[in-house]
Length: 432
Image 1 (cartoon, rainbow, N blue to C red):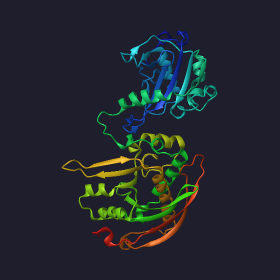
Image 2: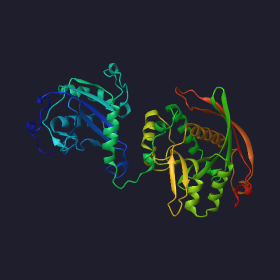
Image 3: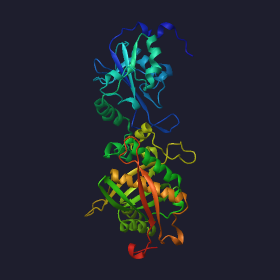
């Protein structure tokens, strides 16, 4: 270790003391490479001097103790990492939001530090009386004693103002973290909870668990790709209004093909068109785009999943089927629910595919279909492939629980009638 004399390190206890800091540790909606070249979600440690509105960081030192990585950590920072950073902000402060970004400031220490992290950012907003006793943010307890030893006596939790999160972090910091050549991808679609009326954490839990069970049941081993399966059930909209709903689901792709999921069509005609395109394979790109009309749940990697869905799954404990082989356990099998609209370009214009998120009734349809398919696959009843692929089978009756609209985990029982309609060539025109 290099020779160091005590006088070289600034004694923090002797620094002038003023003001209050808010330290926010935020999991960024961005992907960067870690030291092994693997994609990771970085964390930002942001200090705001609440009296004068300065965003503080530090001049990084050359050791872990002197905040080697500055205000970005490649994994969730421990209390020790946050402490090292805070000490460095006291001894070697810089200001991020001055006209000269990174401007050096005079060393000082605050009188109080309030903490929040991604999971607690919105906790007790507007309920100031609850902040002092809140211990859900790990950095409050983790940093308290060491800060007291430096003369920072007051250390407790405080939430992050929503405008700050939207304007500063989402609006300016995160876009700066994205690689310049990054095309607009599915990870920037809005989250289901954020854009779907009536989507609750409880419904998310039920929907994701049903999707995980579907992947584990390997439906592509028993059912031919895009072979329509008919589902009929009563949808209760209010106590006095119920309507009968029929939709056609089908297995898409397979694990071996590297692309797999489930699609839902509103009519047998469009479901058959998709089946036909899948099996005649004329003009593949166009065919697949056309066939993908309707709604799909494709299982994708965490890197292509909307950040809001990833963060909500982590926050509320939604289930993801474990990845195969050597992949990290929560890297694959993320359900991506989309409505796909294909529009043919006119007069030489390019064809366009637009992606939106389904409505709550459509997502409930996925929840119920996954549960019904899994029950019948596990019982060995639902199969359709090879020479028997066109044959009718069923109907079977399955009772499934739905949590659509559920606030506290309450569910409603729905009776599903599931069958394999006979496939006749006149439904599909040309046919294998």
